[in-house]
Image (cartoon, rainbow, N blue to C red):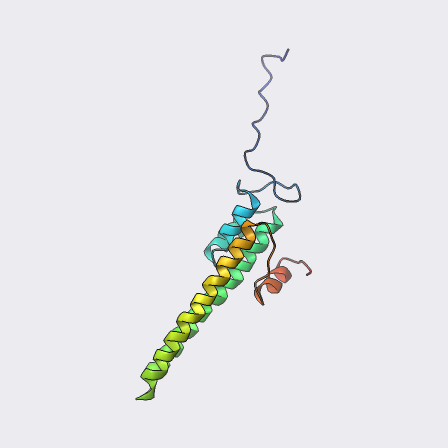
Length: 144
């Protein structure tokens, strides 16, 4: 019979352990946290700061930070290029329009890459975004 002054046992954590047996810092399952971390830049920053133990989530977060930063820089360079082309006499309007169309296609491609990364993360697979994944692994001190 337990002693009435003994404290009750601590409640069990509702979050399942991350792959590898280490507990999650976020309280979410690893695959859900990794999929949310795939939201470019913002999701990556939030989950990279919050998650201290789960390397699966931290990898997707770092990849998202790099991917989102590249996407942001692309937008800045694209805006500058569009303004330069727009300022050119006669042919500039045509070139700016073509660039605007190409800009839309590139954005669609980047969005598709983000969705693929989220699907891979939710399925529990570790997927490297081309050119970005190896950089993320290097930043985290992992080898391929």
